[in-house]
Image 1: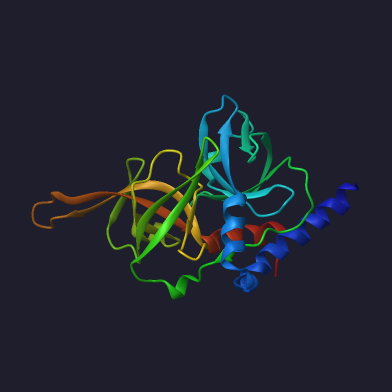
Image 2: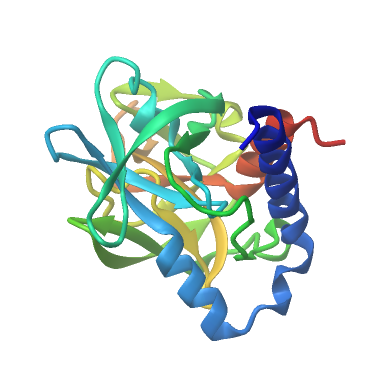
Length: 241
C-alpha cells in the first residue's frame, strides 16, 4: 500500500476514534466490556519482563499508554503482547506529554485502519468520591483491582521520592488503591466499563501537622491521568481542529 495513502487512512481512523468519544454511549454493556477487555494489552521488554499496559485505539496498532513505560523503545526492545502471546515491537512514539505521563505510539500490527469503540466517562459528571476499577494485564491475564477516586486532590504528594505541587497534577486525580509496579498504563473504568483515565504511577499522600511539621495519615495512592489528555495527544498528532 502507498505510504502516503496509509498515513491518510491512519489519520482518518484516529480522528474517528476521537469523534467516537461523543457517540460511544451507543455501545451495549456487553460490547463496551468486551472491547475494553480485548483492547487492553500487556507491555513487555525483550527479556519478557512485564513493563506495563497499553490500550489499542485502532485495529492496525495505535496504542495509548504511559510515556515512562515506552520512552526508551529506541535503546531496548519494547513489545506489545497480543492476546495469543505474540509480541509486536513498538515502531515509534507519535506524540506524548511528560508532565501527564501519556503517549500515543504505533506497533507493527497488521489490521484495518479502523477505530476501536469504547465508552468514556465524562469528567464533570463524576467529581465526587466514587468507586472505580483498574484493569491490567500481567502475564497476559486480565486482572482487576478496585479503588476510590478522590477529586479534587487536596493534599501533598510525592512521586518517586520527589515532591509534586498540586498545580502540577491538575490533569490527574488520586485513587486510593493498592497499586503495584507494572500497573502503569492500566485503564481506570467505571462500573459501566466507561474509560475514566490511565494509571500513571504510585504516589504517597500525607498530611503535615502545621505546628510540628510531622507527617501523619500517610497512604499509598495511585495517580490517574484523565482520558481527555490522551485524546488531546491524538488530536495534536493528526492536526485535529
